[in-house]
Image (cartoon, rainbow, N blue to C red):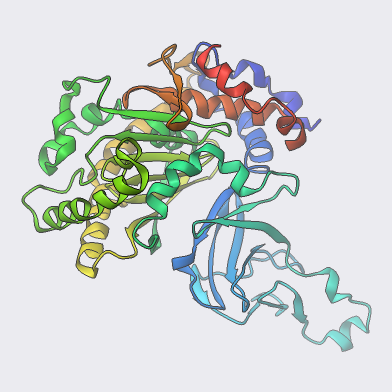
Length: 452
């Protein structure tokens, strides 16, 4: 057992049955250190998308938690990822965020590495090393990479389940928007900003919080107009018929607000008109393919988080990565999501709409950021961080549904996905390894959440 695990009482952090979490999870350094080891050391983390590295030699740099990485398209079309660290003295190898290259040379001593990560050239190798350097042992450290629908994720743990198995039930919902109209594209490079909050505060918000939309975003919704303005002030009926929530075995969550995909695009604006016409023209195909009940998801506003720190919204069309920078700060990476077959004019409108709502200076981003920062900073107070967090909304009313995989919350406004997120968080934080998790009854998590 690691030193970090002996210092943290994981059992005390999350009460799954009663929908309670300890406030310390947003503050304590020891908990954060264990998260880096257990969560970010074992779980799949977003790297890039096909549309961002389409050609051989294309690369992006980014992060898997606090580790810097290079992600690169190979000549055979595959994608490899490596730690962005020269194996000589540990300097950063690549400073550029994006580019195309056949090799990388360290600016410190000139060690050069090929696209496949192999060490190719060492300046004055024969003269200085005199045949003693085995270059085959000093290639870049490679990271396990797998893809789903053009999205690439990395994992440091060789024993982790495949990405396909890790996504599990949530693939059903991802397919509805990732595999439509020729698939999706991410529009980059991403905007980047720093936010003084714990990484879990935005991850839990996106995983399933429709409760805050009509309250936190009231002024913004009134200014923007669109379908979501109807729930401004939390005065709309909050339960049956508004939407639903979903949670899955490894903490991924998904939420729906029915028939509100154009969301915050003003009804009489050109962008709003184009967007509504797009959904109206494409939705019948989805209903024919999936049936009326499931097909209704297309054309609805969607929110979700792929555990631990990759979130998205459809309608407002933002794709986020919450990169931890210690327990009290994150770096936010934001891309716009577009459907490949959208005309250029509509793609531009969608990107513009995303930037005005969830870009660095977006009005909805600013609304959320205030809350997320206080959720973290308040815990500097000893008495405050001894308290508890409540995620009991809808507790006792979750169910299984033959038409929708996962555990289902029967209202869009609920905390089903919160409870599923933290159930998985507790399990992974406390597990010796993936083998210990995967040997458990694969349906036990459902019964734990619905109380049966």
